[in-house]
Image (cartoon, rainbow, N blue to C red; front, side, top):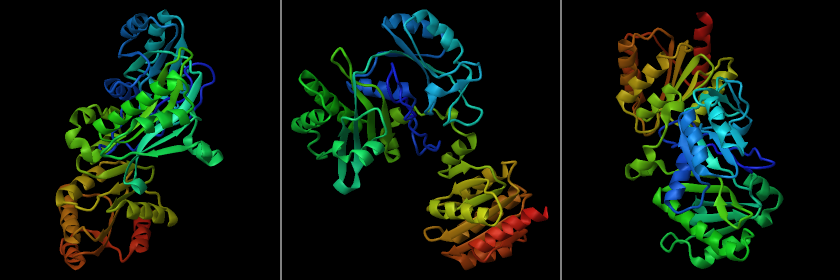
Length: 421
């Protein structure tokens, strides 16, 4: 999820976490959902409640009984603190010592769109707010567990310099980055956890407390089939408590079959409807601003297709990757998505048949053209497995399909087809 990094009080930092492409393959959780998962694994987080209306938010603030309260709009985007609501309220993160104002603030958040540097221009409608206890942070550290190919398993990474981009720390002070390779069969040993806690700068009783949090975070990492659990900051409070103030959890989408409860938390309401529909058919789709639809197999080839369309004066309307094991039905559904976009004035099909059988693509194309009564020019470039049979299917279809010899030829013909209209 796109989290708020930095201090709850005082000089906040704006190192927001980026949004993943909204697709079923990439699970995005709201902040409160990730913190609930952490709580369930015994990880220490701030006390919090969630509300979807102003009266409940007010009651939550009173129930907390905290010296200071932080109210956070829940959307899948970073930069919330500097965002603006269409209600006129500035900031999606607010601190207050007066619980009675929480209801008024929530009333100006819920049901309104929040615009940040990571949202669409029109913003994202806020449906939930998190009402949490605000805590002082006397010291910020960075801690993460991630899968590392070089080590053939999980690795702990930590730094006493937290609350900022870890890439910046690695670049300027690499000596402050500490790593511990975890034996996947043995797990995190006590000596490893204590050594990492010491390297993070925790002293006295806090060292043992931090080591305990590290082991609990590893338990969470395993339990939810995560590929990464990043805590920034892992903070120390004046009261002597180690708290995970913010976390980014990445999940292994291949484990969805055994993590149904976690993946059921996925809120698709903020996703682009076309991208969501594409994901149902295992298609990777990203909408763009142009008018030439791209229908390609393979992410690299799709990017190259977008580039060459641009090179020849056109603008791609989308990035659509069919993937490898494509079926005829997927081809048909892909055409349905492309033709439903009113911006599309031409379609460019660029297929390199390695795993993909070009004849399957050709049959899917002809079926889609007939049943959907395609009204825009269609340029097709096929190469690879069973390409001659595919070309025969297209040529004998009687459909007005423009054949292309190579990718550059296809791009030129797609741009020219629009120019003729």
